[in-house]
Image (cartoon, rainbow, N blue to C red):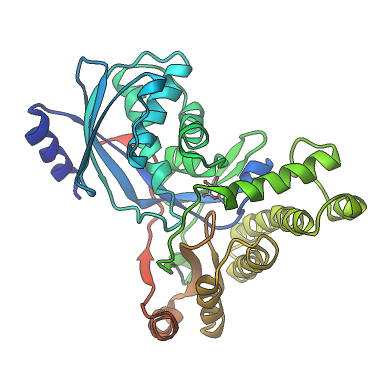
Length: 378
Ligand code: GLA
């Protein structure tokens, strides 16, 4: 829905003029499942975002209309007021996390809509959290810094939605900058912007959505995190970050095969992020692509967060001469991210659509994304 439509819906429903806010979804070029290990990630915000029309209503109630779902929900601001609807919990969680940090907020009226595909690994939930964290901070003049806004979204996932996620998605949604990826050190929280314009080097970036439902709520994601934490504890470290393969082999007999495989992936991934950043600075897209394939291999075989449909998409990419392809985001469904030479693009999309449909009964969805700005008032 266009921002103007979201605004119009607000006016029709609540009878006054709102302020408009937006915050985007994200891609991640490389650095998967590294954030909660204190490692590096390399995301960028995209031109698919959540848009919310918001106005304080002078009560202690939030009145929210999810325009895409055509659902309305009303809830209070106390801990016991937690709404049953999942989408409303994201907004409720943000309100609660702000309150826990001493932020004084009141009730709001809101209508919102978004074009970040749900469950595709593009962080639609982070986009929603960041939109409201940014908006409430602005509307009530709370003076919360941007990192804390990202942490408010992350804490919402942990405490109200059951996903023990890292900081990458909310960070990318808040800090995004057009034309740039961001390398974030999730231990020190230092980050740097890297210009990213694959077109200028003859490449295109495209996402293929398997349309396999991606559901991080529940155990599989949290299980991966728990494995990493067990291995880190056995190593006597706070995070897996910084551990070497030699150190991992030295504790081999003290950890399960499954934990060993998962830690091996994370340790390898740290080096791949560095390799990709260095390669990008030299315009060496070949190396970027190779590392992407290696990451996919690790996510599929060692970390076990892929699925047959996504492995198939990556296999087709290889056959079509795509420079790099891998599953992106938390996993268990969702999208592959593909770096493809411009001249191979049309053939790749046509072949992937046909071959995938032949095997799975439907074509993948194709998303072209533009690296865009983060949370802001419109
Ligand atoms: C999800 C989480 C992130 C990150 C990725 C995997 O998107 O929300 O924190 O762990 O998975 O890299």
